[in-house]
Length: 114
Length: 140
Image (cartoon, rainbow over all chains, first blue to last red; front, side):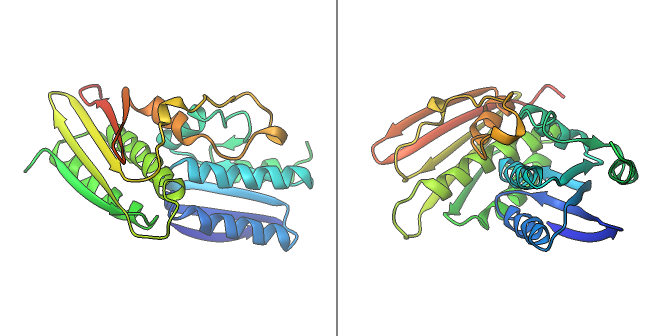
């Protein structure tokens, strides 16, 4: 898996490419936790090019969401492929994460007060 | 092309990569749909990650044996390891309605396997765990 990192003002956008599995989830965990430590509070995980996720990947996203929730931060997901969305549904994660059809919709959501 | 494959994996998480390559080859040889391939990838990874992460109490190298066969619209998977006894069928179902603050981290792997596979069977044979999983492959 590759993680491409971009930024839109105060939003960290992590675009995942490939497989988020037990062999690669540590990379994402380290990236999210270190950005939180640096003071970042708004994250978008762009899944356009993510073609596989297992419970190890779900674990890291939940860990990030819980940490951010405690400190008034947000982690949103965008552009999930059908098979990835199915895993989220199966794991009961659709009630825990806000999901958007595009990165831009997620950015708009974070930029508008709600 | 043979319809079945045998894979020997070491107890190292980097082996998940090699496993997925082998599964791609198997799916191609057997004309399996992307959906079936995804289910195989997910279920095998969950089982093998569990074995590698929690199955062994020493630091030695262990072999995990995987046999996958495709017969008459059904994929059968057999995973054998010499780790401590662990019957995934006895793991409780997670509560998926717990809100974010109290949602436990982890415990979803077995739940995913139950949902992505059609049949699971476990036995302890001497010092080995043997898990059999089946997936119907003639539905899309």
